[in-house]
Length: 88
Image 1 (cartoon, helix red, strand yellow):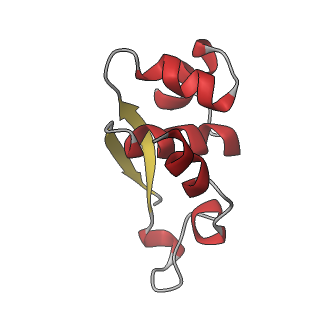
Image 2 (tube, rainbow, N blue to C red; image 1 turned 45 degrees about the horizontal axis):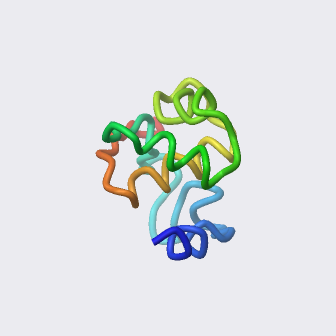
């Protein structure tokens, strides 16, 4: 499962810039927060080689860096519930 997630975290320009060619940037929904199950933050911290505090800041939407976006995407792929916010 870890290998599958690592492969899916390869740079994807559409995800990196937050839009697909078929949508306007004003219509884009971004993952603002992710509700994760207990223990998932430790798995994410090991996967990304960061602290659990960094994971917590990322999934709670406090940080919006490229790493935080990748952590939120991986958390959703691991079964977390995404909370979206529109880019308006």
